[in-house]
Image (cartoon, rainbow, N blue to C red; front, side, top):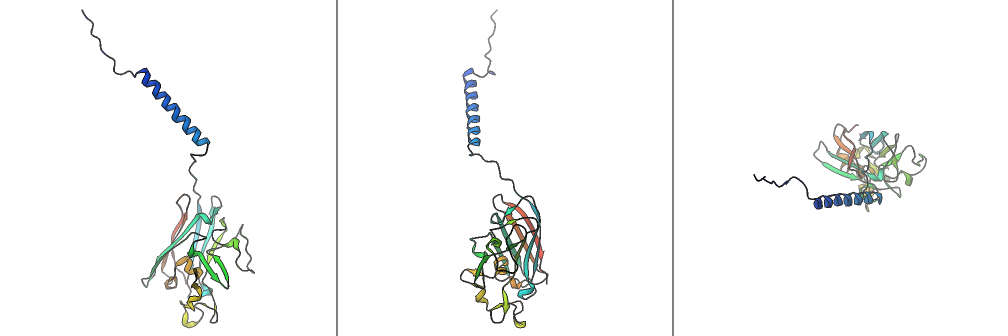
Length: 230
């Protein structure tokens, strides 16, 4: 009786097996070499923080402002890496969206009394500032980092009817007097830089969406719809 012979199709050819092992070895060696040489970098860890925001429009320059207080951060966060975005629709129907990313972003270039600066200005720990002196370069948005206790602040320009400003007379409450002085030559009023040219149309009760985005990782550090106060 003849024995039947069956071909074993389950086994892998020794040549194919050797080729597979060589391929895996080459791939592993390439990955190790790339990682050691810095070609493959680990993903950047996104920072985190706790913030609070307040927006006030009292109709005049001395009782209006935009403030963000940093309550806590996982690590110092350079403002050059933080995008500030505000968007709103006022009760009168006007609307605006402003993105502030720091120097050399045009929307953050402000000019007041011959002094050029970037907003929102920084106050607090690790920032060189002096209330008795003009704004220092260390306070410019993009030049300082966020720590627990840092305050980001912007307010409209104003003084009197001679120099003009926001709401400097009873007749110009909620309006700019000598408007061109505060929005020309590529520079703008600080509140316009943060909230848009028509921010003065906002009234108490209107709401503004405020975001802080970490640019390198795209992480949302903060987002809140803030109600405008008087």
